[in-house]
Image 1 (cartoon, rainbow, N blue to C red):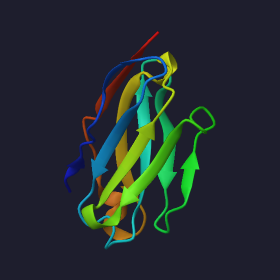
Image 2 (image 1 turned 120 degrees about the vertical axis):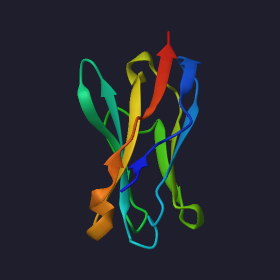
Image 3 (image 1 turned 30 degrees about the horizontal axis):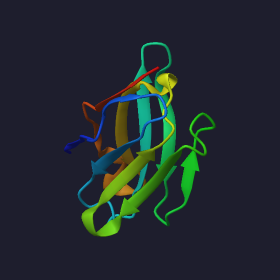
Amino acid sequence: QVPLVPSGGGSVQAGGSLRLSCTAPGFTQNSCGMGWYRNTAARQREWVSSITPDGSALYADSVKGRFTISKDKAQDTVFLQMNSLKPEDTAMYLCKTWGPGTCSRTLWGQGTQVTVSS
């Protein structure tokens, strides 16, 4: 299995926006869901958001109203639009698929760093 490597991270000031992308070949065909997670030294791995195979979006309370998850079925890509960023959103962001069969066997990649300065 190939590790998923998200892109789109960077450094922004508080209140700014970033859009992360994560491509998972076979994501649509295999009816996978995908989740976004973030790692920090203090909180270790924290779930951020998920999108289900039917397109329903789920969010952690800490990002609800600021982050939006979406997907492009044709490109097997899931996006995380992050608005109104706060310094506490600073983390390494990772993505992983879940669901039946091969969906649950994707590997954690390196992640993409998001740094928000005050």
